[in-house]
Image (cartoon, rainbow, N blue to C red):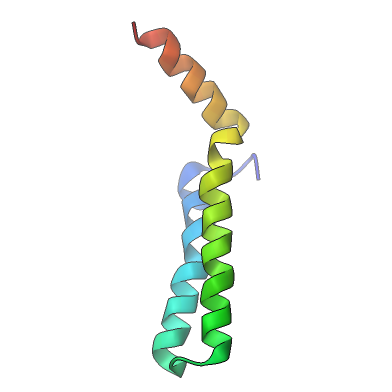
Length: 69
């Protein structure tokens, strides 16, 4: 995923969660939709927690440190 732009990365993190919530609204509160939401939340959390370790973010943080006193 290093070639993806930041907006695409956000979409890949948010879209599964949004789809799971939409399915819950359409299909109701079932075991399947609860499981989908659980997996989607884990996917979103993994994306958010791993973002600081991506090469681009590390470079941005390093550049900010040089700009700030």
